[in-house]
Image (cartoon, rainbow, N blue to C red):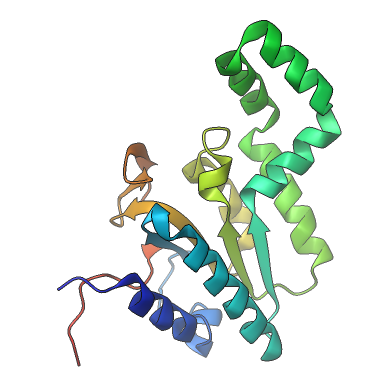
Length: 196
């Protein structure tokens, strides 16, 4: 029996507040990386839930850092190239060439450093939410960011909100584009569950 997204979101709200989850207990030597996948058309509901969860966690004195991948990309691009230059380049060379150029500027290592800076200025981060994965595509592929974040986060649990499908092996953005095989994260709140 498939579980409705609303029910999964309710279970997610409970899960991220558990001490075992926040301290990454019970995972053995695995890294505490989690992927919460959801139907892309439910993006606004998921964003609203993330805001509510973040507020609730902060009220419980849990230091949670929300990273919007798309916003990070925009800020990085602003430091490297002006909007006028971007438009000019696209007019001359086309959208595909522009995307290729921007991808070069947004190397996973560069994004990792930007996230690391946010973590350092955020104090003792206990939990991180990674959002904006769908908005950042095709400039950034989520699996390459996740691979680069492993050494940065250490034992800090990371929940990536993924508009698509993840089956503990394969990422499929929007349920249409094969993103990559990724084996280092756990799927958070599985669909099929016993009703008890």
